[in-house]
Length: 640
Image (tube, rainbow, N blue to C red; front, side, top):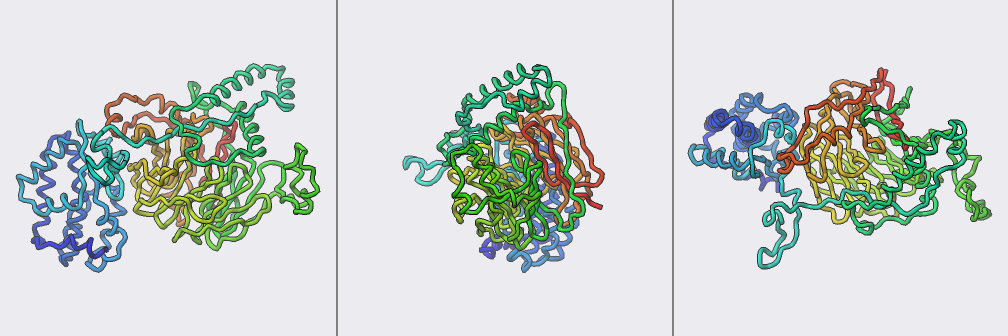
């Protein structure tokens, strides 16, 4: 298959004419109007790429080397990693079996330009004798044309950087089977109805009807201490909470769209506790631009090499994965970690008591921490289930393991990934979890079955991170191919594809309302995507190294980002800080009627939304977590 793809490079063209053809293209772009120049310059990189490979394939090594050295310095800096790989391909044999070459040949390079600029290209090819360029543009490049004015330099830069160019417009359009009157195969609705796009139900599912008491003994004691001054405030907050809870979200999917587990009694108790905690939540940002308080947990003398951290939803448990393959779980409260009693002891319990869940645990087994053993490679990712009774882990050994936090044993080993598993994440509703790895795919699993329910394939390189949407209907993935994708769990289709990162994407986080997706990576930027309008709406710049930790506050007012340490060494140093961004202010500044946004172009504000910066002396941040009261918990490892 690879050989047949490479055969398209076979040509009888004079090797000395490649320099002339490329120079003619450069001169044409330089002489173009300023409005078109930025768009037309997007053609230079794919033409340079395939010209070089044609020379190599046809055994013109000397000419290829000279051509590469002559024009390589004119490429954009975000192509450096790809150009480094290209420089190592100097013979025809190097091209065979090379994954980078296979990706280039099996996926056309996408260049998105306006109709006006596309007309200029066609006229250029008609007027000039440039057969090499004409062949490359026809065979290796896809021109994704759009209506309207050409994009600005900033708009182009915001969406550039993908391994094979930008995401095509039609990738965010719905695909349905048309009638025989038109075509009998799958057709893109956007070709017939251009405004028709895939609908993504980003809204939140309606909360179950559970009576939430306003006060308990602790609240009554607080009111007595404070003279009863907070009682009215609590009633007001509860009223606001109930109004949001009972309000149906028009953008939410049907509750039955994805089968979700029924609520157990323990789940209802947990939801009541979570609701009561949210009534005491501190309001962040806003007109007063209030920053959250931060509590940082620091690992010292971590000889096993901490590689993964997670904190459960109610902030009572912390789990860490280590390079020596073991996992350790700590309690963040005075309560110890206990194991469930034996079957014979459980049979003697009064099951009608209100404290049955507490009496099921054996006090004699209580300790401050528990260790879990089973993996045979570095633990790269951890995720607690919403009920806190399960923990899922991903490892270098290619497996995903499900652990019971009641018996502290391994329940199931999920084997499906071919290479290392980089990330794993539980669904907010439990039962489902997603994993991703070096085999370029993401998978969705269930806790009661050992085979994956869905396999999401489409990325061109390692899938480095995964994030479950709050309504459990979608999964987002970030990849080393520098793209972000959103997948529909119902049918396995990719419903959104975003490009804009200049280096691998290492972290993803959904906003609490489910509409916005934040991503970050090795390019030290934090990007924010609007799932509704399908465009990039923000770039947060301030970090000086790889950013692979993100967390939204519980109310979505602020976004926290942190820099971590690479598993393979330091990348460009460390800034060892946690930065807080005024997310709500950024959203309110967006002009939803902006013409560029309506046409799917990136709309970036020049304002600085950095709310506060919390530096550490020598502690890269591994994890960020907002408690239900909006206290920010940071976890890092002290580096001597």
